[in-house]
Image (tube, rainbow, N blue to C red; front, side, top):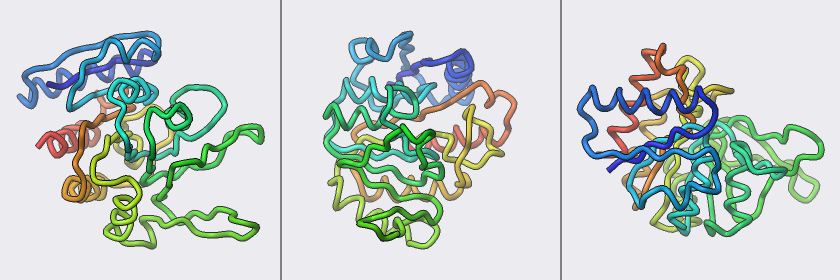
Length: 241
């Protein structure tokens, strides 16, 4: 079964309901369930134990993880979602880690990694980041480059991720990881092409046991995006296959 969670503001809710019809028209789903809630705190008690979730605002993944309690989580996202100020779509992963809903996490392919204000802290404990592009961080007074998809091989990165997370993972794919022309999510997009994302997901399927997955940050922009519809359908087919 596939669970659809039209969570967030109206563009996110409408986007989730639109892709539900898109998948039905393409005969890609039969059994499905729609779970609605205006508060993320209520999601865990409402959603079923499922294999696949389609969500609007990425904050909904917090509720899914609270329900499933996986040991390890792998997030493919144009952002880290590790801001640590208040619980929202930009901080859900930080609070998931802080509250021990998961033990360890990895964020793969982010581009936007810098806190929004000087007062905003970035959560760093029990999580590793592998950016899409070359990025550096200060370690003990010296600048050190992250391992990233621009200068490191995917095989090398996935081997390190597997060593850190173990074999079984919960996988969340924020569709804003794709380049702007795909027009799926509402806000800033990442740097991956569909071909690059599919290659990453193929290798993840080969290297990990995916306990469950979600596709997040779907908005109603996808209605007017031929590339976005193609990308959504192909990612869904790969993950369900």
